[in-house]
Amino acid sequence: MFPSLRVNPVSPAPHNVRTLWLVGILHAFTHLYQVALLPLYLPIRDGLHLRSVEQATGLMTVMMMAYYLPSYPVGVLADRLSRKSLLAWGLFLNGLGFVGLGLSTHYSVALASVIVAGIGGSCFHPAATALVAGLNPTRTGKALGLIAIGASVGFLSGPLLSGRMMEAFGSWRVPIVTMGAAGVVMSGMFVLLAREAPRTTVSHRERVPLFPRRTFGWVFAAMAFFFCCRDFAGNSLGTLGSLFLQNAHGMSPGKAGTVLSCIFVASAVSNPLLGHWSDRRRLPWIVGLVGLSAVLFAVFPWLSAAGIPWAFGLYGALFVASYPIVEAELMQCVPDAARGRFFGLFITVGGMGGNLSHWAAGAAVDAMGQSAHQAESYRLLFGGLAALMVVSLLALPALAWFRHHRPEYPTV
Image 1 (cartoon, helix red, strand yellow):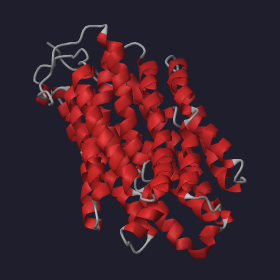
Image 2: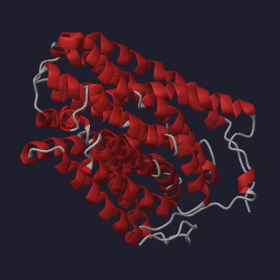
Image 3: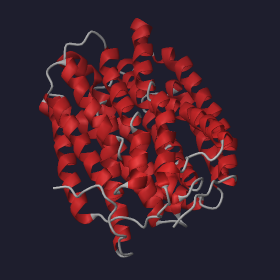
């Protein structure tokens, strides 16, 4: 069914747009799987007879750890093998893991399933970001903004579909199995329709260090650490927001999923639009988007139930759009032959720490006890996470330094 992982011939230009949209569809599936569990924590806790909601949110943390941990090895493969095939195999495993999760009857099986799903999902960003940058070397921000529409669709539809399907069928298993099976089918379609991007051949690639000097490594570590603060705060909103809406505002899983999906409605427009506008000067855009997002984050628990969906929507339009802009700037920090490894290592460092937020949010809400049913109990928690988002802007001097001192590699 799948082609080999060897690098395929360069695709003709007419196939570029089609491949770009297909990558966007895979992006949708990748992020749909990352948020599908958000409205289902309480039903999963009851269905698997777990002791606490912390165990249910722990499934998300384990899946995301499995998603980020292999990112650098996958990035190495993306620099050496077929990026198209890596994307197809990744979605296949991601969907298969979700089918296993939906069919699991024991917590250990559920944990194994989300690990498989996470490993499959890890194939997307190192391969896709490098592939898209290769297809669009001059308008990288716009191109990554376009495929980020897929992320918005996935983020939007994940909690919306899982919550509504759970209520319609009376089981959290139905949406999980259905979404997983759809991903398996889509992986086959991607094989048939997508094409490779132009590639740069590097002499003795396995001997070329990612960081030519030790200074590059230290600056990269600082940049990844501070962006990890952004990811920790931003990722926490899914889990913390779901528990906040259901506990403090008495929403059902379906209603909470609908409200959470508001985060990604406007981002489907803001991602390509702001990505295009930022191609000339990306760093000021990042400051503005993340800074305004932090302000909105801090005020969420002060709002009425009627105002939260609107605030979530505005927040999503700003915060989610910062991701393709940062990724476009990262792709300009190294040549094509190192982009898979560079981005793979970046999301390994930042993502591993950032996605501890799901477990941490569940533990924090458990620690609240009965006060978790009062909206004011969440104000300090949201405020602290907003401050962490502001701290993440300390990554920008390191990012600017890396772009200015871009390393070059010998090519043949």
